[in-house]
Amino acid sequence: MVDVILGLQWGDEGKGKIVDYFAANYDVVARFQGGPNAGHTLYVEDKKIVLHQIPSGVFHQGAVNLIGNGVVLDPVTLRRECETVAGFGVDLKKNLFISERTHIILPTHRALDKAAEISKGNEKIGSTLKGIGPAYMDKTGRNGLRVGDLLNKNFTTSYIKLRLKHQRLLDNYSFNEEISGWEEEFFDAIEFLKTLNIVNGEYFINDKIQQGKKVLAEGAQGSMLDIDFGTFPFVTSSNTISAGVCSGLGVAPQKIKEVIGVTKAYCTRVGSGPFPTELENETGEELRKTGNEFGATTGRPRRCGWLDLVALKYACMINGVTQVVMTKTDVLDAFDTLSICTSYKINKEETTQVPFQMTFSPIEPVYRQFKGWNTAITSATDFGGLPQEMKAYIEFINKSINTNVHYISNGPGRNQIIKVDK
Image (cartoon, rainbow, N blue to C red; front, side):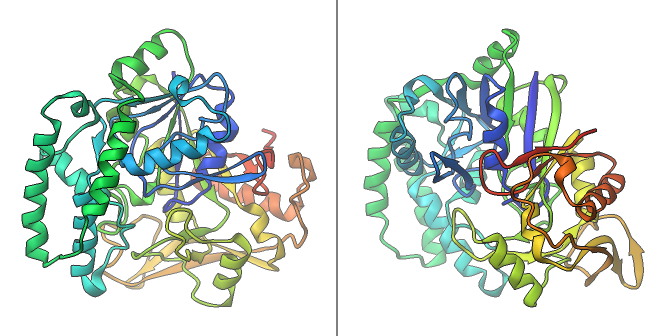
């Protein structure tokens, strides 16, 4: 069977640590979508590691890790990651596998991403400029190059053909930045990529399932960035929800068992797009400072706000979430009063549904206030040791989202996770 861990907000929920925590119980950890725009932060031997494409189970002995076909892969970023991970004594030749159907991000994809974003002016969507969108566009346009193509003697010819197509598009943008250095680095990384385990991903993972192995599917970004169900057009280019596991790894829906959704105890968002509970004031700044809310991949300051139950309940619904993990609860330790958005007011009408287009009309969040716990919880090791005010905060959330918070992260450490007694 396959269990899934994914984000329930706009990404940055702390999924890397959560996957790392659960991975010890699994035989296979597999990424099913996204690209190097993801940044999953782990702490290994007290050192901070940010993984962008390699699954977060890579530091667990005995587990194998698969980069699935739903991912778009940047070979340059992958090589750098591999060098970092190998520095911790991890043998990637034994525990990292890449689906041959995984699409490759080319240097010209990065150039197109940058050119398109610049052309939008004030209507920028907040792209990370990693080439993600253009790579997925080539995938759906049936033009993309895949990892399996590297083993074809005609790869260079195919590359040149696609590069020429991209160059014509870049000429339309009047993009003149020199990218020859990017290409040199790219082809060096391609040679490295060829030395890794390239497999038929769907057979690989279904064979593991057939053997009774436990598989953990790891998502990137968050549900509210899903290309279909997120805050379009301010979204990523892939299906970030649990349905993406099936198409991103090649597993059947009935193979999915637990869907573990990760949410912060408040909300953050990087880049542009609607964010109903955003706090553009001292409280928002305090959340950012206390929570160290800066992008793991980009370093950009994250926008911060109170927890949005309308969006959270929606994300739990479309994912079929069976368990919730709440992260960064310790960030709320110093607040006297906490707020939770329970509904939206749009054109003077109150609703508990996420609208089709969140930018058509101003959204006014309707809040319910809670008393803060005003005590440090980082040293707590069980649910009983948490303040009553915090338990009330979580219990209200449980009743609102029709599922339960099963785990609470109360600090950045690998072992700072509390299992909630049920």
